[in-house]
Length: 330
Image (cartoon, rainbow, N blue to C red; front, side, top):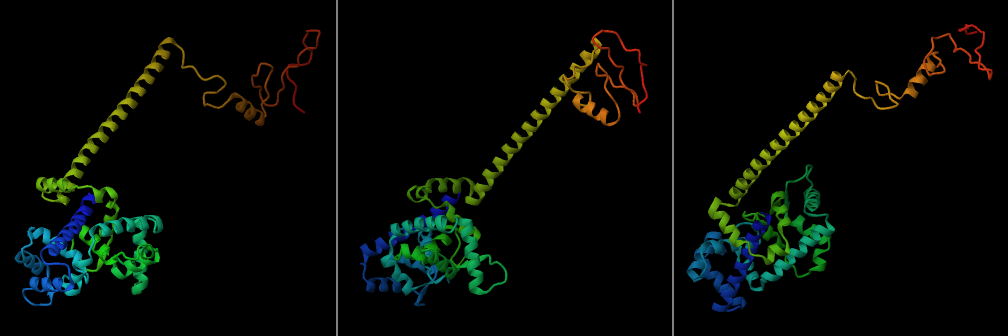
């Protein structure tokens, strides 16, 4: 879904490139031509173009695309982030190169990943820069273009790509979120950069987006529908696994109980492991414990009473000694 959001901005870049090509073919590419086109679009003679004025003026001028396609280009021309296009902003369209913009976006993503620790870590650096520039006590939730530009320059992006227009890249990220440019980026808008890849630029998910919008009414509705369906399947699968585990435990306990019953019917108890007591302790440990309490082991390993010694054995003659069976311990 991030790639589809990014594709919306890529589509705006392609449409702006088409609009530029159409102006060149119809009127020319000189600075004076673009000045006259700007005046033709500005029917109210206000000196600036709002979104509505830009869309209506392009239609009157004869641009063959529909109003929705024209409107999505407006965000990439609003270089002052105020919802208006000045003549100076419009003149930037003469040098606009869509393919170069997309290459610079991929380069920006690589700088973010390789030098700034990734999209999430980079946003934290942007927040720190914003807080230090504006002397804020708490961590800001929005990032201004100035902080964005200084952070990228410090990472070496402008040195590697001196001709890159960072303001257009900033506007591209805003356009990917579907919101109007206001000169700030939120974390929700910034993370859309994760969907930027070579496949998102060279691919064409427009058909998929169209299907999702026709079927579900929008991208957010489509995501919610898919997420709900996935949660239902996951919940059913988890309940089945829990029930199966409980059944296995019950069967094991039942078979173990039948084994004890069979031993009880035969008059014998269950076999104990060799060399261990009923409590699971080795007999050697029991002997040590008995010795520490004053017990002594007889010749067969049987424990004697405290204060008594085992009966001495006879010598090689094979006869027992005439000493008493037990002697007091001195």
